[in-house]
Amino acid sequence: MSHPDATTAHTSLGRVVGLALGLVALVGVLVLAFSWPTVTIDPKDLPVAIAGPEQAVTAATEAIDQQADGAVALETVDDRAAAVDAIERREVYGAVILGEKPEVLIASGGGLAVAQMLTGVAANLQEGVNAQAQAAAAAAGAPAPDTIVVAVTDIVPLAETDARGTGIATAMFPLVLGGMIGGIAVSLVVIGALRRVLAVVVYGAVGGLLLAWILGGWFGSLQGDYWANAAAIGLTLVAIAAPITGLVALIGRAGIAFGPVVMLLFANPLSAAAVPKEFLLAPWGAIGQWFPPGAAATLLRDLSYFPEADATFPWLVLGSWAVGGLLLSVVGHFRTAGGAESDAEAAVAA
Image (tube, rainbow, N blue to C red; front, side, top):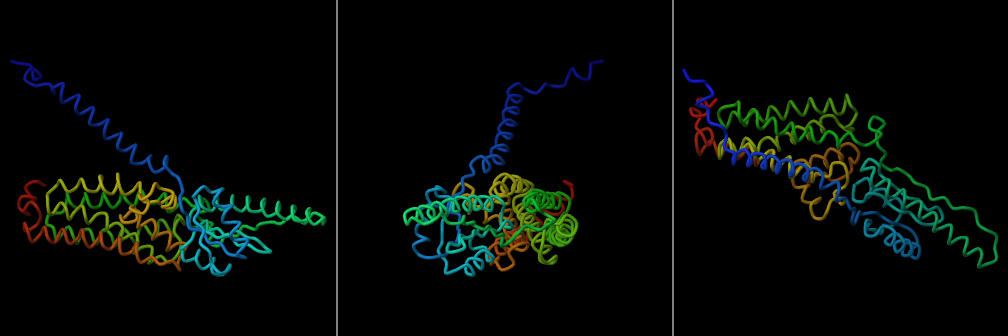
């Protein structure tokens, strides 16, 4: 009687080495995908409003451009009210107001990184304004003037329930993962392309209601209207899950790879959920807004802190991915009566 292991062939050394090298390459891609946006952060052309007397605006623009080294792109507005309106519409990240009472306007709800940067601009501005005032007084033989204080006003402050401003950024990875898990699970468990469409829609609707309550009502990470947040989250889940089930309907189980490759490794690191898109190496921050993770992060922040902002673009991005993915399932259904594999074949495989 032969030993059971006697007829068992060992894995070839070439295959062993190939597998090990493949796993190393995978880990390298993961590290690169999630670390690259952080290590290459270099803010460029952050839109910031500036208002005041023409001569003062010109002098301040030159000084700020020199200090910020291209990080800030100043946009002249008529007055403080116009600057506040631009901030609330999320057209600029903050503002510099010059005149008798200089002031720097920030919006920590839009991101602490920019708010901290503008606070530093306020400190430099105060130093420069006082130096000019003292020099002018000395030249005129007048007594030293009182110190001018540049006020910093937070136009859109963070909520007390998310004082560190990490709630939305922290929620994005689980949201992306949830959309992927939903799409993959539906693809593997549900038989029939049209039934997968129904499953994805129900998953998005119920998931949106539940997660909006957890992130908003329980954790306090989301502000604003509950139903709007639920709709945004639900649409995000569908926008991530539907392309997976749609591709499975067209090309079979190989379509499952779309989620991890596109949504997790490519789109999620470019979502600019934690910092403004201008912090990412151009043009990747802008490109990231065309994918569900980036659009969702922007939309949820708009709904929470910038209700006056035009949120049409992120809604359209999420809707396009959701509808496109669902249409792929319908096309797959009509092409193969249930997907790249027929319902009967899928049932046997299951």
